[in-house]
Image 1 (tube, one colour):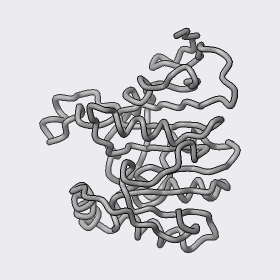
Image 2 (image 1 turned 30 degrees about the horizontal axis):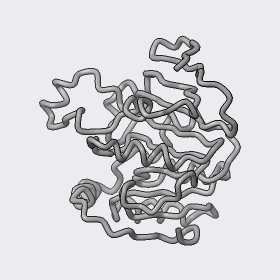
Image 3 (image 1 turned 135 degrees about the vertical axis):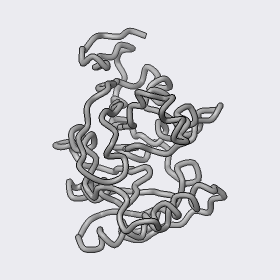
Length: 235
């Protein structure tokens, strides 16, 4: 990766880049401009290190992480979104490297990040689970994986609006691939509150936070489920 503040462009053949550029070009700001609530809730007070922000959009999450002391690699397929994100960050002395790329096209080091954050990522589900495996692989020993997506409570209504939930990777898809070397800290549905930006109409999120211990000692994990209860799970 290049120096902080610079942008790396990775060649991609994905038509999704054009689709996202078209979406961002429709308005001056698509998202709220605030960091996502689950990221703030889960990572406030965490010891900073190297963070990967997958699908960084207009950069609010990346900027928040950098302000907490993280060295951030922020990637997105949209050039327009990335240009906006850089413009915001250039006003501050923060450590962010911008990458114009999708997750699977980016040359990410295995185990290269102490935090991999994917907030509402538009990652297509495939038979080989490539996106899920890429997220998991990028987390360093001792690192944290945080995946958040909207809880689609009415799939039929979503389909009526042209969105097919089964096409996209969910936190549950990622959780299903975590092996005994992982500890699941949070795996739950929670209410969300946001006042503006696209997606403000969603009322609940699915939140997965897991970490990869430096020294794996037990195949058991304790985690919170959708009902908020904590219990021991032995594989």
